[in-house]
Image (cartoon, rainbow over the protein chains, first blue to last red):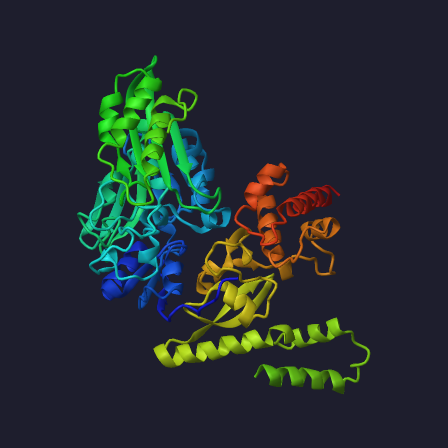
Length: 341
Length: 221
């Protein structure tokens, strides 16, 4: 039984009932504020007393942030409120029928209880799982000047093989690559107004800001995720590789949406997470396989291309063949793919 | 404070002249209804001393709120940073809900909130105002008849040490509300967020399957 160190450090809890009120509170408290969605990532930080915000703003009472709506932008897409739980996403009939990739990815997150409480907005905005960082070590990401994972002795089996820059942590989200493959747009409410960004631009690497995995600044809120109908009912592929079948974060995952004509790949979007500090949209792979037949040779070419430039750390070299094979399976289909080391 | 209340309860019982006639279980129940559970007196005491430290340190105290727990309106003082598991165990004396990891991993603290299984260690108590909380203590009928899933667990002797049992049962009851006739595999997926340190999963699943069958039968009858 885990040692219960203590209760969380005291904070003031605010429970606004509208986005406008939440924003006022965030503005008022600035960097002392903490946004609480499902709480599953947040409470770890607070219980471990690594983060001690003075004001916690709980979004669970804001009705406008919940639920799935159809959008009226003429393209018959959907808008998912950021506080919609993962279970609601998994069970939603339209998401299941038309955007099954998202439902599949959300169902592979953590455990049933976590999906019952964890939100889609929280899943894409959660912090990295690097245990040095989460353990409160003063690393680059925590504002220090060292990476404890990127040393010869550092435990870095779960860390990055691509685009590392001082920090080698990875993004742990399962739904993020699915949303990138579906060409989703993220709606962000900032003090200056509303901003809509492409899913892949919501996430940032250490080269842009080493202390955050996403673009949200203090005072900003992710309010909704819009999925256009562009990839509705496309051929989807999602695979998550993890150590345990429940609860675990991905060692790596892959998501793709594809439209074929005959045996040719007409259109494709593909993204991988667990390889870098942000989920990676593999544009080079998309360009290379477009117009090609959907077969093993194309899949192998895609896999080789995907891992170009990958640099392993001491204990994560396995991620290179893992990523190669996941991309290969996503492009050529599992029945076509054979397992290669 | 705990001590004072329990001795007062003892006094009440003695004054009524029924001490010899009541069983140990009835006696403990009597003490619980007077506000403090003997078995959790130490816990309650601990909670209040930690709370005291918090108040001194931060000047942020408790707030009196009303929670709907097991069909009852319970008035309770709750800190802003308090988790539901903490409130249930250490403020309300509902120690059937267990705290294992306190990190949303093991499932021992599972309770139903508006019929949906949640890890109560990872819910702030202030966020469940106006919602219905159901713990293992609230599962049996008023006349003491066990819930069909509890009966299934007893019939199949599903658990070894049973520390994880309340969590498993609450999760299973919540899952069966959405899927009353699951396959063994589906049920395993439904309770996959609960861990058993005794590795007794096979028997647990057999017991919960029996519970599901009991539930279907009782709703038919």
